[in-house]
Image (cartoon, rainbow, N blue to C red; front, top):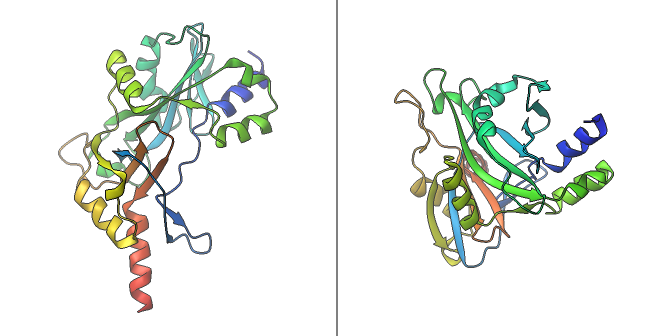
Length: 255
């Protein structure tokens, strides 16, 4: 495969940015009283503090493993980069995946790789060197996208061009492939979600007092936060404990 093709594939299969549930203030990184707007049922899942990994599965069965920013490995050892233990964690799964779309689409499995010295929160999940990976999304795209200029691909991706699985399809795929998912915490009506900063801080503490993905008993068990998704995945947002703690502390200091 040519370098331009790999560059396009990398750009097209990156995970798009997820906005925060309350808008971030560009001036100081705090939260503003502007919550995301959901309708219907909202699915709450644990947000794991690790590193984003992806398995890019081509229609012919070829595959690539990547981090959030770059491709690290290609089937048959054509590319190999051990960064952040992502390849070690995801290669066994990539080796057994089979093309899942008869229409020739590229499937991208997004997983959070966590534990073993991955980021400052590693000790919250393991007291040693254990490594974990949890599926949190699957997207599909047509290979024709790879013929576009990279700038156009980036705009398409960040504008919602990737077709993500609904919650029901995601769960069926995870079950069929025997992949552990990011923990599903609860499904709640959108009308019950707090709209204020303090209310959401309390909501987080009540729904996720400790992480559900600790890899051993010696872990610290402190969670990062929650991801909120509409059932059809048309709206998605993240709420992190540290963002709310920082914002409330700043507000208290002003009084």
